[in-house]
Length: 47
Image (cartoon, rainbow, N blue to C red; front, top):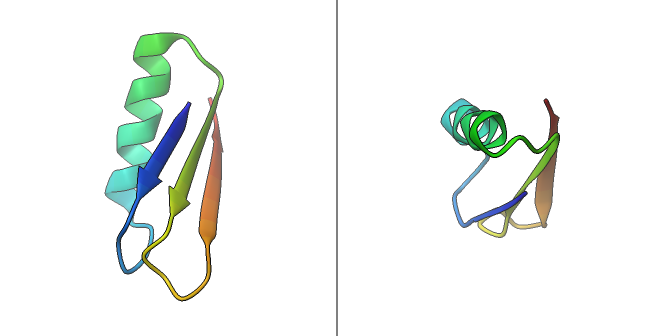
């Protein structure tokens, strides 16, 4: 699952939201991509 954000930085609530989406969907990998920082930032979440 891919979650796209535009925020100053990736916060814990983004990771919690993605984890909940993974639980409900049955998927095992989620990626949060944040375009709001100076550089592209991403976080992988494996459930």
